[in-house]
Amino acid sequence: MTFDAREFRNALGCFATGITVVTSMKDGIEPLGITVNSFSSVSLEPPLVLFSLGHTGNHCQEFKESAVFAINILSSEQKDLCDRFASPKDDRFKGVTHQIGENGSPVFEQSLAVIECETHQTVEAGDHLIFICKVTNVTTRSEKKALLFHRGNFPVL
Image 1 (cartoon, rainbow, N blue to C red):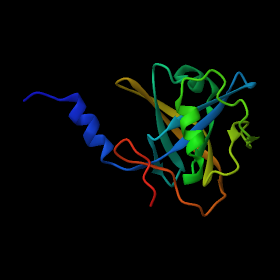
Image 2 (image 1 turned 90 degrees about the vertical axis):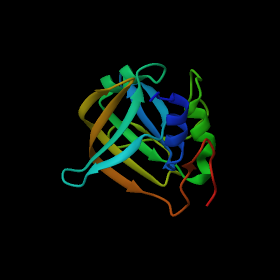
Image 3 (image 1 turned 60 degrees about the vertical axis):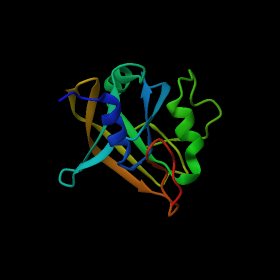
């Protein structure tokens, strides 16, 4: 039996996911942000979540070094943030309104929720690094609909 990488990718696309922008600060002064849909809850006690970043092109090393994050769960009205932080732009934060959360990471006011966390453990997994994070603060801000990704599109429910 041969393995078809395209078919595998298509199968993964059948699983609808929410969209987040994970943010942090490089050296405590330069904001970092990346669109992430590989996000999941792990444990309620202790409160743990995870996200993963590819080793190339995603500031993976800078996120690993910063060790604190804000996971901004995007609303359906924030597709522009999804696109901006998924792009290879140099200054993704230019012109983007944000505040600084309790742990020093950028947060977006219109997000459905913001989960602030710190690195609990990292796990090498193929071409990605999995960040398992201990939650330190949670803010739920909105009753709007979530931004979803399914089969390469952003369906409106």
